[in-house]
Image 1 (cartoon, helix red, strand yellow):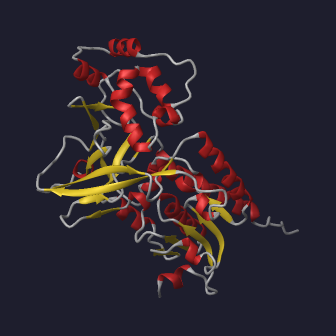
Image 2 (tube, rainbow, N blue to C red; image 1 turned 180 degrees about the vertical axis):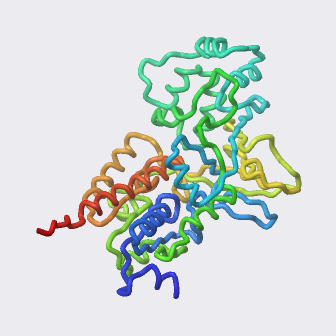
Length: 389
């Protein structure tokens, strides 16, 4: 019996057609199949499951992330409990250095960063806070990403760490971007050099792809990769569609394309055990064409005589990765969102369908919340039991 025979009903119909086999689509496929006994067809235009979190071993046997490093961190016990059904974990706390003035210093900026960069001897949080306050240049009304940083740490640190990196990443100056872009990056007065401070920080022990494979290993889920939604939307019989792709693409770009930034990755395997001291090194300088170099053995703990690194080059062309946070783009999205709300039989979920940047744990939470809504609607639709007289 084939996967299609198992997942589809005898009439060839599916309860759900789910578009996109990343976190949102895969979690909803698993929940609907395991909890509702639903017949699910899950498709993805790429030749693999896992979305941007897809990892695989290269020819040298190094487990690497094809679409750049994905570091898992969360404060949600619910998210951890759910994913732990499909993976064991390897504790890992991500650390990032930035190359500034020829030195590798911690980012986010902390007390160590300030001491190393400016030849200081700040010994306490209070001293570091006072130093940053002395450099800060208050902004009356914080509207842009430039305003956020200059208001907090002043123009010199803004130019050293943020301006060049942001221009490369977004193709726009921070003064042209919503304040949310740099508001995500904290400035610390202590010596904590971890990139994240979440209560749970770990990597799937066997990798993300293995976790997705276990998640989707259900007789009522059929997975088809290398399949574009446009090619099957008229030919697949499904009672409901869950769509995790770009929302403007679903509506055939009726109001125009939503702007995204993309990334190009240059993976290299080097004949050395380790190439850099931490998982990621950032290059804020506008003179360097890439934004960062990541090294996967730090993330995975893999032992090998060689190592694989990835250079990241931001791009205006390619797969959509980052919605560009500007007011006019949000207004365009709202027009598509209105169409989505009026579209019967389709649920839009995930980064691309909601035109927002989410961390992985946030997408897991959104997918679980979406399932709960579907579950509640299903319960309400059940006929009430009539008490026998």
